[in-house]
Length: 162
Image 1 (spheres, rainbow, N blue to C red):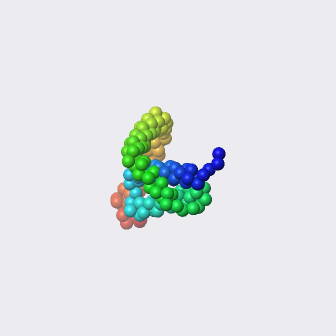
Image 2: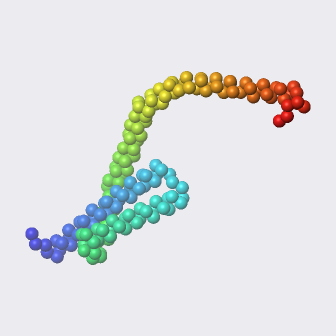
């Protein structure tokens, strides 16, 4: 199939609309992660900088691979329209889906911890009980001579020096 100039430009515009949608998805993922992690100001600045570097690389790659590096009016208009289309239509659903997924993963991991890790910890504590009892007995046995020495110092301060 031979491309005409108009069909080629329409295809490129379509790809840049898709790139705008992808940017919107990346923005929402970053926004949700930032809301869940709640970084301090410095980390927010670092995260924002990394996000915009990623988006810049994404746009640059789109320009190079799909438009041979040519910057046309429809490239940024397509990106803007794609981003706007995404934000006005499916952004809320996507963010809700991410939050529900995170919530269900959190419940899943809590269940796994309760089902697997806590019994192992409980077993370890029960196995360590004799060691703890023995340790306390040894501490008492070692502390008896110390207590005798302290009592002797109190009774005979001039004879036993520190």
